[in-house]
Length: 160
Image (tube, rainbow, N blue to C red; front, side, top):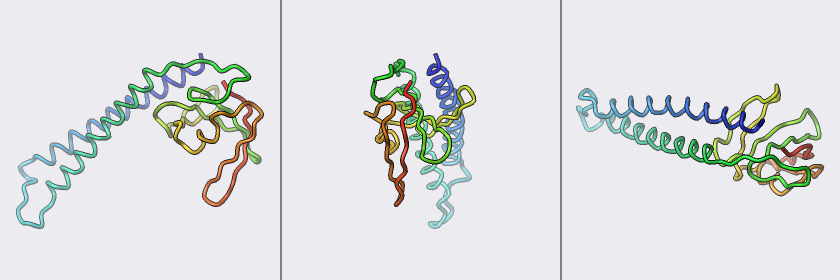
């Protein structure tokens, strides 16, 4: 199933990101608690800055773990021709100008970009402006999306 390939790609990406962030969080924690980080004057803020960084990295570890769990629990299914776009859809849209674009609407990992059958796709979450514009649409529906001051128009070419 094509969507399982997308799910596997997302999980591999999240696992790699989680590993890198865990290392960064551990390094930041070590820097915050290192003997050489002890403040020598009231203006020496190295330990405080390192502790803020460690806290932020720890939060990021938690966020990625939650995203990974959401993707692992996600039940994928194929859309039939007359089903509206919803979470779990692989959507093909055609802009007024240019080539087709592909989006996979997932519960997490928005912004991840992958390639399926030599076609690039972007993962979006249901809270993204593009997903909000697409959800509830059918094949051959027009979609309008305002970005800044310009309005862009698309045609829903496929829902899988």
